[in-house]
Length: 98
Image (cartoon, rainbow, N blue to C red; front, side, top):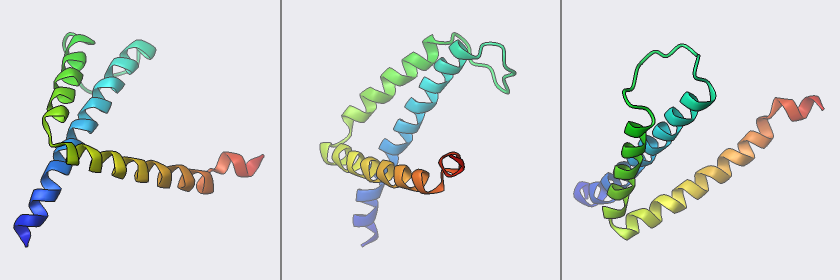
């Protein structure tokens, strides 16, 4: 039972972690371009080259995962985005003031 659970969950954790790394790498590139003078708590060498290489390798690793894992990730991502959108609309304080 545990083995079946792990065989389903572990690839989803992998693809979720890779997606998070991709988002963080994009954010590092964008922040360096849009806000070059803010204080940084950590330094990354060779920006934007290192984050771009990270994005490429993470995407390659995502494509090495089974297709069913990619499809499950897309479905879960879509569900999460829909929930996030409607929750944001419900809790949006800016729209309530207008």
